[in-house]
Length: 252
Length: 245
Image (cartoon, rainbow over all chains, first blue to last red; front, side, top):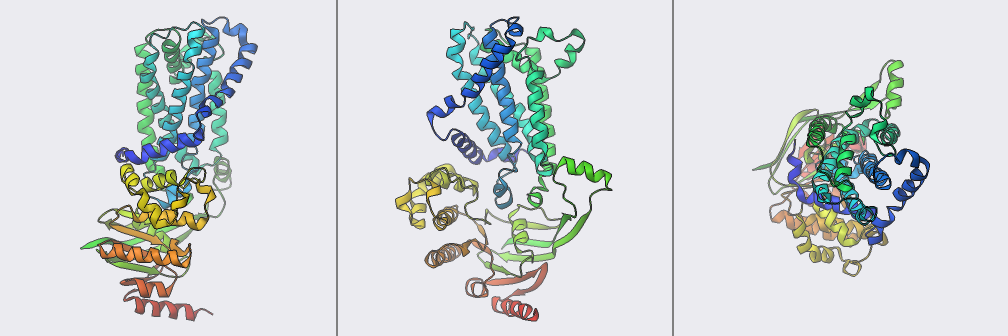
């Protein structure tokens, strides 16, 4: 089931060129791609400033949230298309198919990591505490694995249900509001807080804020929970992928 | 030594009578009494063996299951019944330039294509000059792929593939592209590789090709119609064609 991980050269090459193509090889490419989230932050900050005033570091709070959600939204909506967008690789080569969602997940994970690092000067400027910023090196791989687990489920399903894209775009939009991005967690009513916290992304986002702006070590219990969900997603993802993989060539 | 063993392989395709590619259509079909499929056997009970160092040709009418069979031997498509055993590294050339990205440079594309076809990255770097030379496009080394003609792209792809040190090459008529000279060069190269022990499984529509190039051949029309000496197989193929008005 994990045999494909031995094909390191294919994984690295496909990831590299997926990344390269996204930014068309220019250094400005990454910076350019940041204009959208920053404009979004500006608009949201203007509209929701009252809500955000109840949080510490309100600007940073919002920006980190937006950038965190961005990887989920982009990583999964592009990952969804990892098989259907590369028909020839599936029908005409022996490249292990898991590598297709894996390489897009990795490529977007890398660009998301770079985006977060680019925020560093801004975080310092707005007074964030970056003592534990380096822990991002631990958190981000967990996030990438989580997204990979999701993509292992979405990308083969999209072969069978081509309207999954529309359905999933609703999910990613809802996720924006289901995460504490434009509001503090405190406004969640007590009685649904337990349900709210079941979402591993909520806990992971809290951990990102801990290391990126609060200078705190993230709650280990929360991270354990995120890791457990990630492992479950990876196992379920591989099972589903292996099951659906058999029909790829016929359906593509 | 047998390099390829295909034992009683069958493949059935299910063609949906109604389209059901989306969740919406699936749900609709639940109410309209389920999906109906038309079953279609692309291959039925096909068995053959290819010896190491042999050039084995497959010929047959359109829809006869040739490409399906190659995909199954290459391990891309799972058969419904039967078994395929392959000894050695298989490089399928089912389409030239799979994974090519026109926005990237020639070199980048060679690296991507070579890796996909099973070369290690440092091997590609080492063989890059050789690949360019064989494709006769040294002067375009830094060009973007989109600025090259389709024939040139096919040449790059072929040169890359033959440099992947395969034990078995599976070729699906892709060499029909390109000009006469390059085609000749390709077949010459394939023959050279064959002399060094590479097994070749080839699909062609051209009787001349089968007769002139292959050691043994097979006429495939969903199942094996004839197998053996190329000239006998071609005779049978021509009879089959003559019978149709």
